[in-house]
Image (cartoon, rainbow, N blue to C red; front, side, top):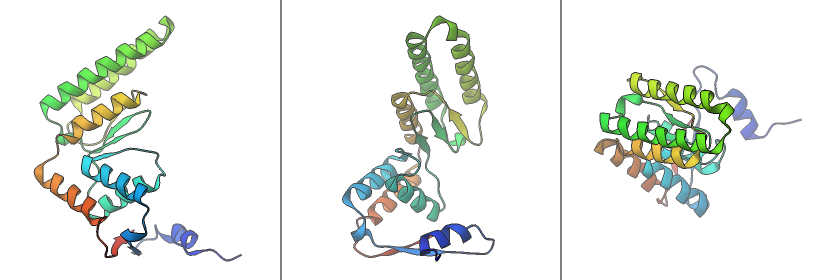
Amino acid sequence: MSDNAFNMVRKIRHLPGLKLTATLDPTQVSKRVKTSAQKMLRSGVLTLGYRSKARLLAEQMLSDAGRVSPATAVTWAAYLPDAAMLTNEAREQIEGLLGASKLIDHASSSADNAKYINDRYAQMVKALKTTRIGRLSLHTYQLEINMQIAEVVSACRTPLMLALHNELADKLDSTEPFHINF
């Protein structure tokens, strides 16, 4: 049975020394995928499911530019690939959001879970205060809170990062095809 090109690339893309290049024609990308990817690139927050086309496109464009998204917000957590970009004010805002999330968890669960909830949030606050460099994961299991945390992180972007993200988003409005490296 013969493999199609997609399956073949999927099998060999992690071989050492291999560099694959694809050509993306922005005129062939659906409007919904394009606008969703542009929104994620401009806001600096990756959302949606891990395998959504818009998210994959935004991630690949960031990766191709040698960057990562400042934050990712999904239903169960907010992920921050680089905690070094957080200011003290941002850390305080995130700690306040974690406190609000803790109150929501207490209100929506039984008294038997109180110790677990307190311990979980104490660990998240400790990680927030002590992590200065590297990845930070905050598992609140509340999409709205995770989105707000991601927005706080996104507000910490430098003007250079903002310009790069807007440039990548504008690239999708082009009528000319461009290359994406894998």
